Length: 212
Image (cartoon, rainbow, N blue to C red; front, side, top):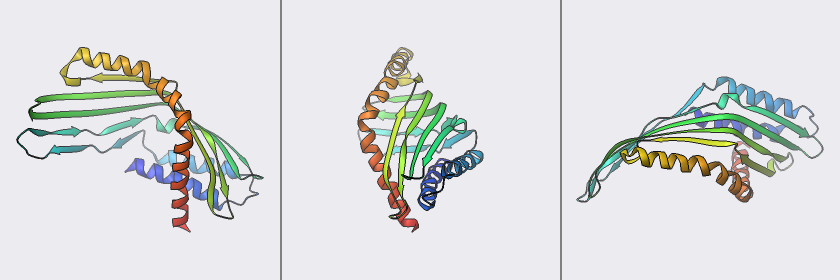
């Protein structure tokens, strides 16, 4: 729920940009103030509620998969750099998240064709996570006319334990993820960024129209 509030507040920032006067030279400072206020109310650790997936009773396979609470830390360390051009209504931004850590527990209990009873723990630490881009707002049409989002990370360190109750397999998966995830993200992101940026822009504009 707290993560939802955080995302909703980010949309509120774009709402503020939409309402800001075109010639307001202090827009960047005001947006920074909104971000600071959001970070102030965030806890040191965000928690996403887990869930239980029950397999419908049948003759082949029965059981359940329990996803524990997901913990996310490091969000409050966000460092922002903002620059607003009043002539073009464009806000350039850099969001340096620093190091973000995720912890997730999954318990799988299956009986039937496949019998499994194990507890999986996945820990991930992303180092030097950064978002860069810009947003251009039309105050006349009350919409975001252009948006660019680019994500990059320095490292992605994983620790997988309990995969199929096999320590050797868990270590191999850990090594594979540590070797490849950051490379894949940094390689693929520039290719998908235009499509993702368009999607986010459309969602923001829908939200802005609902406010008006």
